[in-house]
Amino acid sequence: MLDITKIRSEYPILNRTVEGRQLIYLDNAATSLAPSRVVDAIDQMYHCHKANVHRGVHTLSQEATDMVEATRERVRRHINAHAVEEVIFTRGTTESINLVASSIGDMLEHDDEIILTVMEHHSNIVPWQLIGRRKRIRIRVVPIDDSGCLDLEAYDDLFSDNTRFVALAHVSNVLGTVNPVKQMIEIAHRHDVPVLVDGAQAAPHLALDMQDLDCDFYALSSHKMYGPTGVGVLYGKRQWLEKMPPYQGGGEMIGHVAFDKTTFAELPFKFEAGTPDYVGIAALSQAIDYIEELGIDNIAAHEHELLQAMTRGLLEIDGTRIYGTAPDKGAVVSFLVRDINSYDMGLLLDKLGIAVRTGHHCAQPLMDRYGVTGMVRASLAVYNTLDEVEAFLAAVRRVAAMF
Ligand SMILES: *Cc1c(COP(=O)(O)O)cnc(C)c1O
Image (spheres, rainbow, N blue to C red):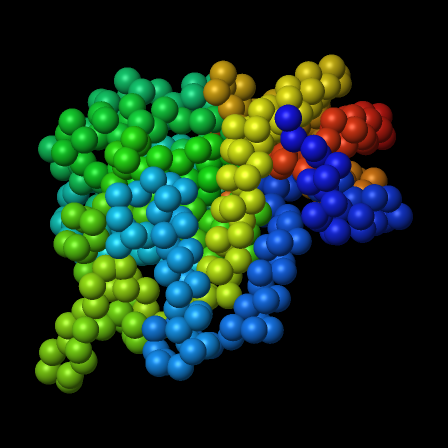
């Protein structure tokens, strides 16, 4: 099993104090902390390799280019994509989804339909609405049951002759539900409809296998998986990426530019306009090494143990409701205690040194579904401990007693 004490020693930030107490960081679903090796990789890039990629013949530029392309291969292997041309670097999940919505959106027509789910993050709703407004496309929404599981029958029924695209979360950032994406992709493909999977919450906790999932697109963010902020990945099947028009224009993404006609670069560069965050990309490689060395299954098993302790403990507190009780669930617990406002709970927990997320979690349609305006969310990562969970539970009890 994992040596959590040793793991924690790679996170100096865990030693800092908040309100005079040692920080307990339970906001990992918003962003995870980064281990020293990731921070060191950023340092190393700035100190020794800083040069723009793909542009220069000089040594430093070559080194930076090699680093970016090595990370692309690193990502390809990690997600088991078929080819490096299918791995596009973006600024994060949000940009990955906007890229697909905007580019695929160009290929859609009036009255076409897109299927989303009620548990989507705003970044997998609003880009589709923007394109929907331009093209008058309808959005259909897969409902959930009270435990936070998608209604697969309703999903199947939503397909019509006009359905052109499905976009859904692999793991919900609020409910923690691990959606049966493989099965849902199969259903969509039976209707000849491509699928984008929002993997922002899956990437830090689950093994990713693009060829097994057979999804058409997959989006993830480095900063939620122990990596640096500012970098994301879009996986796309080559057959789609080749058909799709570029998303942004600029340097790097062109073949030849003239005022009467510009041709575009080959994949993946067609979708990578401008200077990429090559520093962050190099550091992402370290984050992936880190996850693989610890073993994603070991990480998930540790988190699951904490999740169970946290769930049990919260349910013992009078008047606590947990939102999201799916049998297959990731390392987040969203809850409310009686009618205590989530913001008040979050503020008071912070006074006790505990970082949780409060509010709508960028999922307002889901808040509406449950008839609340916000929830408190505690989310776990590999460096969290049972002691921290106990301290968190004691703090929630203490806050609950104040009201
Ligand atoms: C965080 C998150 C996003 C957005 O990711 P960014 O890194 O902010 O672009 C999208 N979907 C889900 C499920 C998320 O948790």
